[in-house]
Every structure is written in C-alpha cells, then in structure tokens.
Image (cartoon, rainbow, N blue to C red; front, side):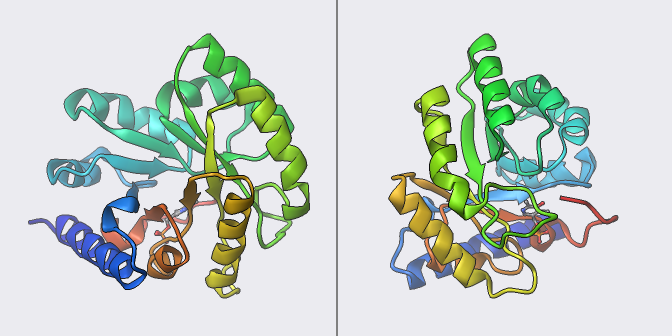
Length: 226
Ligand SMILES: *Cc1c(COP(=O)(O)O)cnc(C)c1O
C-alpha cells in the first residue's frame, strides 16, 4: 500500500467508528476525497484502491485532470466544493456530478438553464455561510428561506442538501448543529460538513458527506483559496 492508500483506509475506519458512536450506519456517510492541488499521479493510487468519490474546488484545475481519469476509472462521482463563477457554469455542469456551492440567485438561474440545455441530472447543494463571514461564500442564514424558495421554483428535484465551512476560530459543532437544523426545516437529506480536522464531530452531528483532503493526500503543496 502507498502512504495515501494507507491514510484512506485509516480515514474510512475513523468514519465508521464515528458513525457507530453516533448510532448511525457507516454507509450513510459518503467520503469525498478532496484532491485539489494534487496531480493525477497522486490521485491514481486512491482510484486503484477502489475509491470513486472526489472533490475539487476549481473548475479549471478539475478540467485538466478528471476527463482522462474518468475514461480510465468508470463510476467516478465528482463534487465541486469551491465557488462557481457564472461564466464557468457550462463547464462545471459538464464536469461535475454534484455542485455543492450554489449560493446566489444569478447562479441558480444560470445552472437551471444549463442543466436543462445539457439534459443532465446534476445534484446541487446550497452553501450556507453559517458564520456570516464577509470573505466566505454562501447564503446568509436569514436569507436561506427566500433562496430555497427560488431554488425550488427553478429546479424542483435537483437541490439535495446543504453545505457549510465553519469559521476556523469557532467550535465547528455549533455550525454543524445549525446546518442540521436548517436541513430539517427544508427536509433536505444531504448534509455536507466536516473536513480533515473535524469530520468525526460532523458525523456525530449528522453529516452525510464529509470532505477530507489532507488526512488522505497529505499536506497540500501550495496554499489554496476557497
Ligand atoms: C480543501 C477543502 C476541504 C478539505 O480540507 P482538508 O482540511 O484538507 O480536509 C474541504 N472542503 C472544502 C470546501 C475545501 O475547500
């Protein structure tokens, strides 16, 4: 086993333990291996060990790696977990199975058009800025109701859940609980929360997707804005 394959196995074990501790079924939690900044050669060992669900935060970077990997490894599910600009919507809908960062009316309209045009079944999550951070993307909590109404009008069944990235200085559990409450309010089944440093807490609070990068691939080679 390579080091990353070994780390993948350890992360899966930790996910299973956290789920069992929370009296949940481990298979309810999807592990998204976040491969941003890593090259195809770093990703291949993870694909070889059978993993198929990955996250990237930039459309252009993902375009360089994934079309070729998809041909070699059937069954890949690719998630966009970084901000999406309206002018990249067409590429994003072509490339990603799930877009986790829906957060503005303009983006909703552009995605809705593009999903129809390409007749695809892209799954969408709404990103919520639970910490109300000025520099962070996401719908503000007080604007969620209006935003959900817009989404439901435009997409009917495509919106599956919510995603958040808690402020680094806060206890993430508070944000996980908030997001869980919101998902219950809108009867959304998918909750994307938890990263390398806090995925066990997220699972205890109800995460159905955890986004784990460095705990699998190691420290990222360069700083990434998200
Ligand atoms: C980079 C990133 C992750 C993974 O972070 P790690 O701490 O390396 O696990 C998860 N979610 C988002 C939105 C990211 O940009």
